[in-house]
Image 1 (cartoon, rainbow, N blue to C red):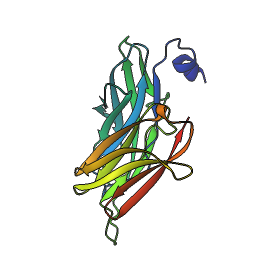
Image 2: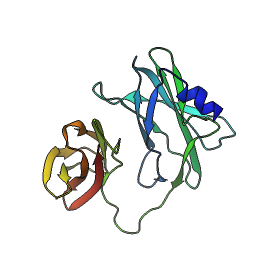
Image 3: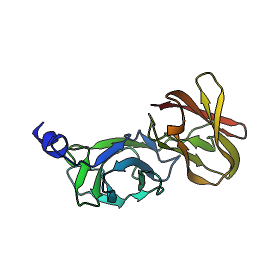
Image 4: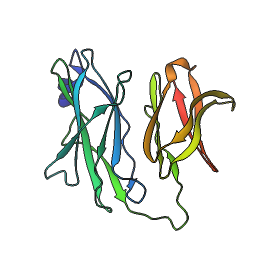
Length: 212
């Protein structure tokens, strides 16, 4: 409690960090593990890193985060692929232009996020496209819609409201092989529940998006 008070509540000018913890990652389907976070400070963010390890009692490694776009506060980095069957522990460190630095979660490196790593090959034909976790969600401003494709393909990303009515087409074109990020300004939508639909060829995926 004292740590939280001195690191966050008692700070007059805190660095704001929002991150959705990674779920288990499958090495058969991905190469590296993308980490997204919203980083904000009144002076701006100078730098940020993701620290990771497979042994929290051993040494830590880090990868620098990059600002996805100047018009957003979303930063990203990719943790390199680790051996299947284990667990990866990680935390974020952000430094503001004013020099203020914060780690997240706050007790890091004593307390961290973690995710398991698998290596499962589906006996059936694996999907060639995937709609990854939308970030942030709930959303109120610039929102990232990540897509992963194993082959170049054409398709669309569309937003529907709770009544099933098309609200906006975010993307209509060609998805290149690999990861791509697509952005929606959720601040232009009314508060409520929406559905993000990814359509590529005969495949369709949908995720819920909450706008506040």
